[in-house]
Image (tube, rainbow, N blue to C red; front, side, top):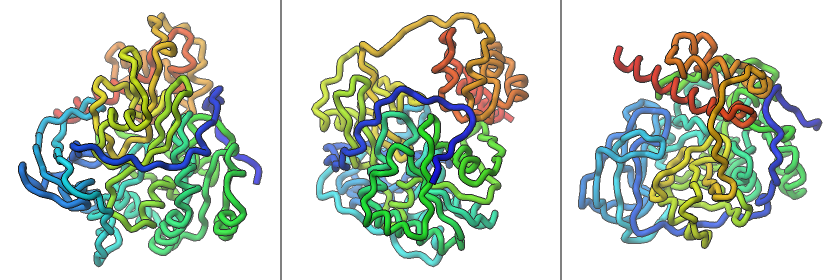
Length: 431
């Protein structure tokens, strides 16, 4: 099948290595920090107390949403603290449960419930994507909208990463079981699996035969190819009104197709409680490139130790990828469900340039996949003119970072857009 694509985006000069790196399980450390907010829903209520003993897979945080996602203990051990003011790497404060490991890390199966959505709720399943939405919420909305197409996103969110394609290659039976489950629940008529064109020859003949009734769609390599809205346009040729809100709640997509990450389908098919993530760890120098399976709550520093990587004090750890990730001030931050990978920016690749005045060149407009005018949005936010920023569709920004990448004036456009969304959220919270 001919590779499809979308308008805008960037063809980055990235060497796509690491696809052949098998997933390696990293043993959890002695102490794990489990934040009580790991998706776009509200905080989960801690169900445990200090000094309480917990078992791996035991529910330790309950979502207040009817179709939310609960949180579970990744290991067996003793609760050493239940803090109310843990600072997540996003800068948000939230409750967190600290567990001292004292026992085996057994995998727990999800309990069968009267409702499929209830089993997802109690199993803690989310759509493992940049916008981490509780899976029960997405499926409930899909049911209401009578979607008849399922798009399985097997492409990594960021350049340099390869965790999703490895999940597709190594856990294909779980992925197919998850697809079948979703098909039956939503009465899906057509299933597409979208992969990067560069990896279309990765699968064996046996794996290809397993996909006999599924359409495998290669997508031309271009960042940010893994965004849901762009996939719907490329695969189904349907425009989606993107209105990601300037606040921390779920958003509905009134479309005829449902997009789920391959990680999510593998989690559904495994029938296990959600306590782990498959992530890529990569540095800008190309010295390390690993695909790790880690427990939720594992510290970043412990993952770097597993790579035998000696962190230079001048290097920067990025939660997420180089295009839209967040630089960490503290390497002891824990892995959460919304983490796609860890990128280490080596000191020789850190470029510090002072921003200059916007020259209105329009490069950011050319590469914007959402077809916005980024320089007008960021300029409005910089002047605290939030009403004007919203007129230029601030809320429709994917936050992919293409605009900042091409800006010849080195203006942190993405930073200003994110700041504008945060300020509008604060204003609405006061109402």
